[in-house]
Length: 255
Image 1 (cartoon, one colour):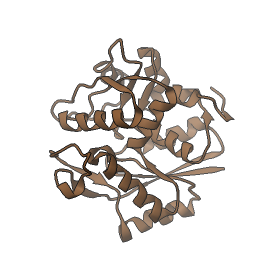
Image 2 (cartoon, rainbow, N blue to C red; image 1 turned 135 degrees about the horizontal axis):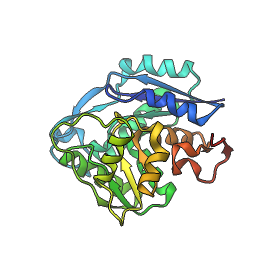
Image 3 (cartoon, rainbow, N blue to C red; image 1 turned 135 degrees about the vertical axis):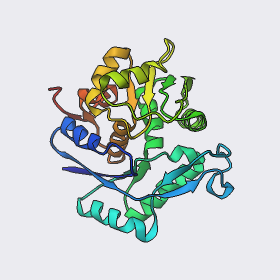
């Protein structure tokens, strides 16, 4: 049995983890714990690394630390978690800020740790896709920060990244998710990314890939894949998209 731990801020579609666990089949347990994160104003120079993106329009959630983190870590330890992933927008603080988050979590939990931001970059490299379309989930500034982080960490090129306008509700259901993906997709893109952990995508990954004709990477999907990567375990689960059909070490049925 492989147990994986996840910390997520308010607004995350935590029920996606339940669906992913079902699609992974037996032998893997996902334990998601809501953490009341601190908010960091990324416009504060002390909060950003030299490679940081500049003034922020909004604060971003960061993992809790110290005594505030202890209950969540203890819960995950009791569940037997072998790795821990923070499901939050670490990219907003630049590479060094995102690394600092991950290192702090690893020290506090005594476990290998990562974040959704790094998970996207690692998943892009895993698939070997070189031209990316990023769906309009964030406003202009966060979109620019995400594409900058992704390009630097993955080596791929972002060829389309429209920004969200206003404050739209998270897309829910296959039709809305397909429209969101198509708003960014262009012929030269070899994969489409849907960042944003509020998106419920686990049940629709294969349909999205069929509609678009190319791999699709989504926040909660890559977060789980990243936790498996940290434990050196691969799972062939085709209903979770192309990312889960790469040189599997553990075979899972398609149905």
